[in-house]
Image (cartoon, rainbow, N blue to C red; front, side, top):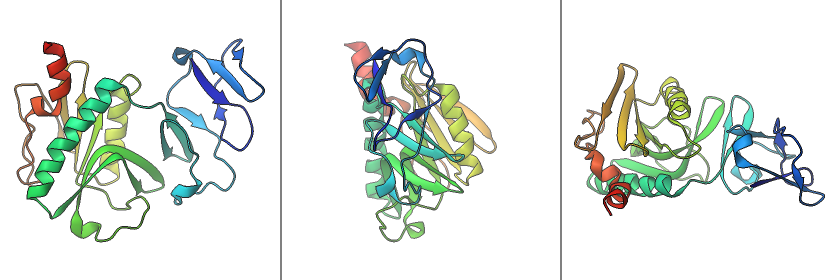
Length: 225
């Protein structure tokens, strides 16, 4: 079951209509997770400003500002967050050899156009982000990576991939955990790569061509156990 606030200082959900929810108390309702469409739209709290992270509501999950709407997704499940960890290991090791790039993760925030979204992994040119501001970055990274999960379907990730491309990102990797594979999407098309393959090298990201198996190391090890 999931709990959603109805009123008070915290945000409430919009358009979360289900039949006969169980009343928990005067501020919360509980709904079966399966009946709620994701992502859920939240009513922004008073004083909300997408440019000021301190005004974003504190929730257990993930938030993005897309098309003038504040959207919520639940926390990641185990296969998803383990794959993100393997992704970050690959990016981080490469980044140590290429200090001219900055590596971001943990819903790496970026404001591109009017939207504020977060990536499971991203790579920026360090010259494009020369100093820390404490806020989201406003320059598109050459690479953004998204990992699928229970609530993050391939269709949802493909929609986000095209948002990245429209915003100026050159390369998008989608890592699909159910049947481990990587999809590389650019404006010129896409390619799919299985466990025995490597991600194709890109001229703007020299040497960043990890083995697909390394991106799913923990998930694959669990399947063999």
